[in-house]
Amino acid sequence: MIHSVTDKPIFLSTTDTVPALAGRAVIRSDVAWSAGAETMQAAHVSLTAWARGNGFDAIVGLRFEIVPNVTGKIQTALSGPLGNNTFTNTSGWTSTGFTFYAYGTAIQYQA
Image (cartoon, rainbow, N blue to C red):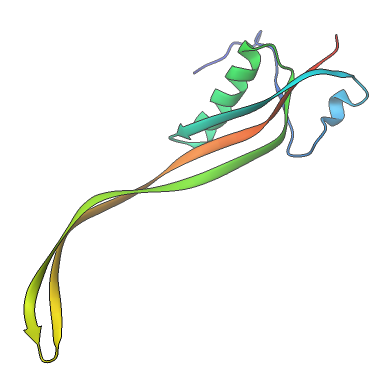
């Protein structure tokens, strides 16, 4: 998603305040998150687009999470005794990828 230079800027902060907006009264807040994005940048863009579209000015307490996703199919067949133990024959495939989550508290300041 590409934003024009006329889009309202959304301030992001990993702390509980936005230094550039210190002293302004908060009139509304909400929990905001972006789930399952393919890149960290996509999670960031999604979160700021949501905040902008819902009239918020900033997101504080911003956090990013990287979540591993493992998919695949494993087949196991018991194969018979080997001495006093039974062994298995395992075959199949797995694939590991990652998705990115971003979350924080969206806030709107008094005008």
